[in-house]
Length: 170
Image 1 (cartoon, helix red, strand yellow):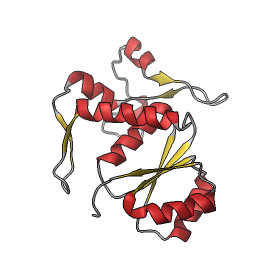
Image 2: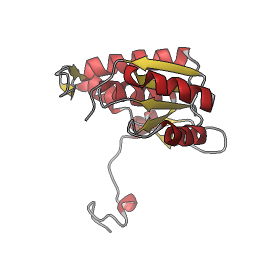
Image 3: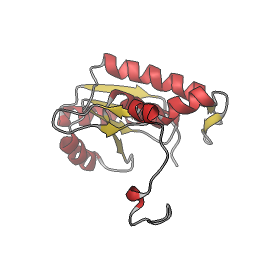
Image 4: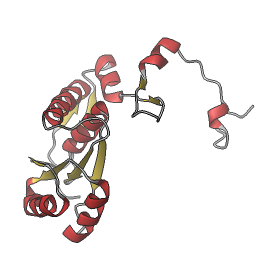
């Protein structure tokens, strides 16, 4: 039997798992794709260590606990849902690094949506190619990228734009 450190056959290693907990980690997928394992580690840590620091934004000095981050993710997921984002939809993110990246990424996971993280250093033509390929229903962007986002919305037929006051360039 392989050891847990054997990268070739790690899936064959037996682990003690609480079946009830495992059942709670299963979520449905689109018809014909079977079940997948889903794990919301923000929710897990918010329940088990709510006051512990989860994220520190070095550029702004802002700090967020797991409880803070969980609340932000819930609020973001609710807002995305109100814009029509659901399971299987794609959400593009054109922003500098910041806690907002986590908000959108984990909100998408909670909705079953796919977060498409974009490199802000790319040109509009390069982003156009990526967005036309991924077909997002929403583009989240820093205020700094408002002009590019508007152009991308027009070119790529993106339903909604969501402007955020994001992080700083790295």
